[in-house]
Picture: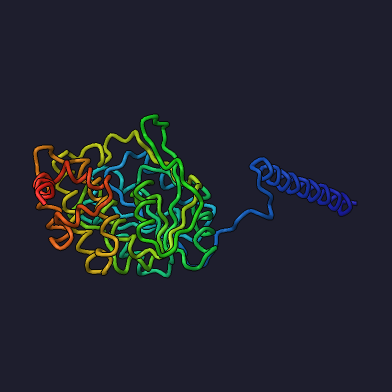
Length: 363
């Protein structure tokens, strides 16, 4: 009798347990449906080698901003990523936050170095990425946010055609800034073997690092210039573009660019530094293109872009003739060749190079 009652009680307990398990399972399933995801489509973490190296340079970032950035990266729907965080000698709690996140996610690699500037920090990240078997590099600034589906969309865009070297994509400014104009008229298109078009498109959009998805092979030849701290992205991308045989543009907004960070380098760099760095960029880019054998064939497009860059931070009473001759060389930058340039380019140069245009009028 006692044995029979015991069996009845055991059946009751087991029945209650089975009911509880069913409720938990149904609750989980309902939760998935609430999120708009079916259980079959939930992506499990992939154990394969990373396909993308995401490089995040970090220096004294507001804790909330850094945490939001890292959360956006580790929660990508595409899991085959490595996250290379380079702490560039932070003096606040940034390194501590990085190490805490690294303990939670094995895909995060934290590198600490003495403060050398953003270009050097990114170069350290590139060196680390080149040691892995990843195929692509994506840059993320430590106070910005990456859209959850960004990596998945970019891999799909890059792999749809085997020869894609760079994917340029759109982004969203936040908090909303009515004075900030981003790439509004981007079209989904592919440009092959057209350096002039590449320059025109990227110049019309932006030279930012973080709205480009790069094939890693490019970085075997190109690095950021350490002694340029302002517009280093302009210099880098102008050196990359001659090496891009196939550029793809997509309209997807995959990046959230924060504009309320008062410590951003673009807000604290002074006019004199910007001016000096712009002249360095002109010389570095021309030297690189000359070595590649691309300068002579595409000098008109490059001259137009570099004239725009110099105009932004010029000193009105300075004659820039010697600077352009130093960058492009006398064989190109002289009175006769300038007269053959498009009128709009001549107009830009006229305000920069008083001596050169004085000599043109005397021909």
